[in-house]
Amino acid sequence: MFEEAVQSTGEADLFAAQLDGYGNFTWVAFGGGSGEDWANDCAVDSLGNMHIVGQLENTATFDFINVTSNGWRDMFHATITSGGAWDSVSNYGGGGWENLVSLVIDSRDNIIVTGTYTSGFTLGIDQLVDKDSNGDRRDIFIAQMDSSYQWDWAVSVGGSGDDISHSIELGNNETPIAGFVFQNSIELGNFTLNSAGSNDIGFWYYARDQDSDGLADGSDNCPRIANPDQQDTDDDLIGDACDDDDDGDGVGDEWDQCTPGELGWSSASNTDHDSDGCRDNSDEDLDDDNDGIMDSYDECQKGPVGWISTIENDENQDGCEDVDSDGDGVVDQLDKCPAISDDQSDLDGDGIGDACESDTDGDGILDSFDNCPTDTDAWTSVHEIDHDQDGCHDEERDADDDGDNVLDLSDDCPKGEINWNTWEPGRFDHDGDGCNDDLEDLDDDNDDFLDVNDRCPRGYIGVSGPSMDLDRDGCVDSIEDFDDDNDGVNDTLDNCAWSDPTSQVNSDGCSDSQLDDDNDGVFNDVDLCPSTDAGDTVTQTGCEIENQEESKSKEESDSSSSLTWILFTIAGILLVIALVVTFRPQPPLPPKPESKKVVEISTVDNGGGQGDSGTAPANISGAGLNHNIAEAEVTTDER
Image 1 (tube, helix red, strand yellow):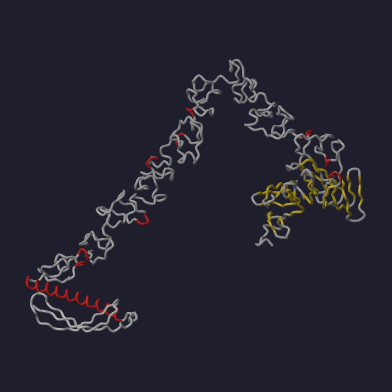
Image 2 (spheres, rainbow, N blue to C red; image 1 turned 30 degrees about the vertical axis):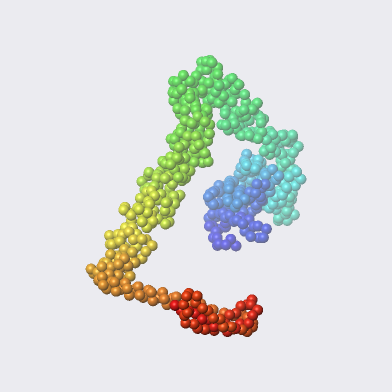
């Protein structure tokens, strides 16, 4: 039922449980001991506390609360908080058997109970006697306790038989009605009931008015003291007639100088300095320390309680006892440092002298931790204006806002991490730039290489140019880099320690631009003849130079070869042109010209000699001539 097995510790144990609206257990509380322990009834008050009544035998335990019966069996009343924890347990009884059978709670949270008992015992101030003087037969009682669990009253009835109460309820005006079983006869006030058989049923309507004020005890807020007006100044459900503290200020009426006084407050050292029940700083109390000097004239309004001002101890009647403990000429009540002789200076104006002040400037930082303990401006140190909480205003007085020992002017992180020191052992700030290496510095050695790309993240401090860091790996070549050109060959084994970092090298750390395998003075990367014999003279391309004649022949051969190539090239170009011309589309032929007559023309050399003459045919054509073309003979004179 309770998700775990529970074993009783004695003959009978008790439990109380709460279920939600779905029938699920929300909490369970157990109690009991070695004897028979019974829970008979329960009810819940206005605060949500559960009240349980029953009987217990010997010693019983309710969590951490232990109770022991006074005789055979005692009745008990217990409370459980709304969360299911035992809050209080009280047992009552004499030498016999007492049992609380039933309870009911009224509108004022009074608990009215009914029960049975076999021998006399006391509840509160009421003595319940054994009605039949027979310790084996039971009598009946009704009783009421107030909301603070103090018994208000108790009354009992009984006869010669065994009388047993069973339940109780409230009637008109919250008057209790108890149901019971009785034998023989039983007297209830002015009434006597006689049983018709061995066991009869009866009801007890208890309307007793003990104080005769016209109100039944069940509805009377002072059932023993007449108070027909039911005056209750502090609304605590206890009438003023029987209330020891009518105004509810915590000071009993016997000592309260203001009763009834103001409501809704409690007397304490800060509200009622002299504990007289009169509220300080109000019209109730005009002399807060009750020294005989009214507050309006009292220089020590809250002086020592119990001291009365007289001419002998207060010559100027200022309400301050003329005592100067530190001998500085200022009486203790007016002395800002009564135990330390001082000049009464009070920088922050808080009434405590600087000589005995733990925070002289009142900025919230104790002097022992304040780097500016005597600021004159009124301000409070908070993170936004005092980043490192050192008591110095960042904008006005703090040259090192984060307290890392790097001045803000030189600090790359002026409002960075706090509670650390640049120069502490362990080197939290390798380059001294004011940035915590582990938390906020991305370049610990300030070499312009981020730590994630820096092979020496906490190396030589400062920027290194290519002349100091050939391979740009963040390590200074001469100090911390064991492979300056980053070619994979340690400098101590590298024959070419400064190779181009982008070139490929051999196992000696050298690239082709640094090697001359045939030792001819021409590096491999430009040597066209990389295997020249030792001692040969070579050209700039690394090839051997022959003797003069061979060289001349070679040059001529080279020249002839060059000319041949040029001619072949020209011929090829001409061939391409001829092919283009040959196969290019031709325009149509012009019309055939008309036949012209050919006449024979003789020519004579007029040079003075008759030379050989001859004739030759000639065709003369003219596009614009309208004559026939004739055959002509031309005679020339050769000289």
